[in-house]
Length: 88
Image: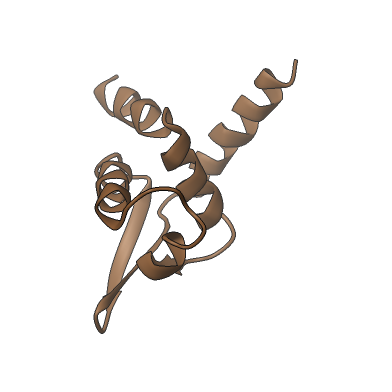
């Protein structure tokens, strides 16, 4: 259950949920993830690290930019289920 707990803990933060939601549409570089958000670049990096360690995100470096994407689309089903439960 350790891996499952790590995933759920990683998703249990509003900023990380916002990151995953943005990445659910497309792969984005850090510069795009940092647009229209209320947190610093270093704060964003910490949240991305937590999501990567939980095996939720994947990353690749292109030039000087790091691009992030959803590693496993199944995580989006978890988010959909939480929305359904929360709406009842």
